[in-house]
Amino acid sequence: MLPVFLPHACLDLPHGNTPGQLLPLTPGEAKARAQLRALRDRTVAEGAQVLILLWPGEAWTLLAVEPPADVAVCDALELVPNLMANPEALEQMHQRAAAGDHLVWLVLQRPADALH
Image (cartoon, rainbow, N blue to C red; front, top):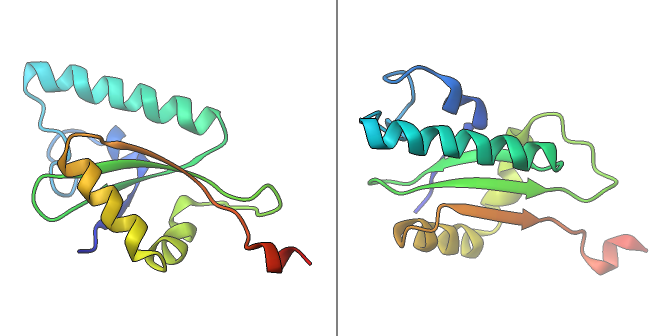
C-alpha cells in the first residue's frame, strides 16, 4: 500500500487546502496541528528532510529523513525514489501510523560496499 508523499509545507496551508484533510481543525485538533508544526520545525532545525505521508484511509506519518552527510538534498521530495525502493519500511511506517505512532525518523546510509 503506497502513500501520497506531500511536502511538509502543506501543514502551513489553511484548513481545506490540504489534500486528504490531514488534520481537520476542530478546537482540540487545531492545537494538535500546531504541535505537529512545532515538531516539524524542530526536526527541520535538526537537519532532517521532512515529508508528510498520507495513507489510504485516515493514517498519516510525519517522516523525518536524515540523508548521508555527503548527500546534498534540496527538497525532501527528492528522497521519494529511495523510500519507494524499500516497501518493507513503508509498510512498517503504515502499520505504526495505523497504531497511532505518527512520527518516523529515518537515517539513510550508503551500503558498506558503496563506500569503497
